[in-house]
Length: 121
Image 1 (tube, rainbow, N blue to C red):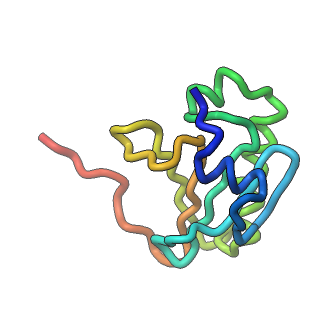
Image 2: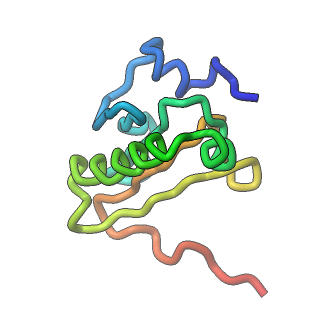
């Protein structure tokens, strides 16, 4: 069940301020308060979706398209469209999702941390 008191829900309601990068009808993008890269932007859908599964099951095609357009526009506004950036969506406990509201991180501004994962054998 979606937690209406999570930090992103509070940001969407205007109870907590954010440094907005971009907003459209379906998504809000803002700078992370604890950036891990020179560019670290979060993009969240405006609907109450805890994770990707809920977003996929409950969001309309218009919401999904609006969200992805917000991701692309936010990368452009943040100045990493040409140099490149990484999108990360931590989904669930094993992925260390910290806020129970589906979101995507845009990381950029310098060469990114190398390969995504290391093989284990």
